[in-house]
Length: 132
Image (cartoon, rainbow, N blue to C red; front, side, top):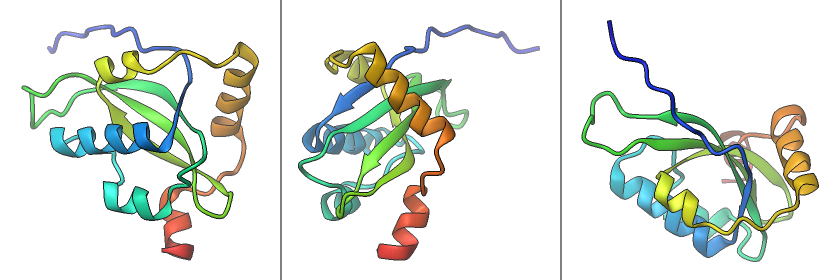
């Protein structure tokens, strides 16, 4: 049987600007992580002046790439051009997530988590099918 390991997934939400989001996405692509958008897509469709939000939901490791560092699969509240918010996922390395500022109030974090979990947000793929 395989060994089960517990990971301390950060129970928080962090805000990122467009530049930080582009850097995190480029890192995911460079590391071969599964959940990313592509810098070209984000440059074209993500709202450059908006705040985007990351909420880690699970510890993930690629079985076919055991040498790859453990990473967090994050729910992403992504603001797209035109003012709409969409749901997506982004894989983020723990050190990169830890380096992001922890600057949201507890109430704001609760609101973002509620929106991600309970509101009927379109997914990035659904939005892209309509606008891309």
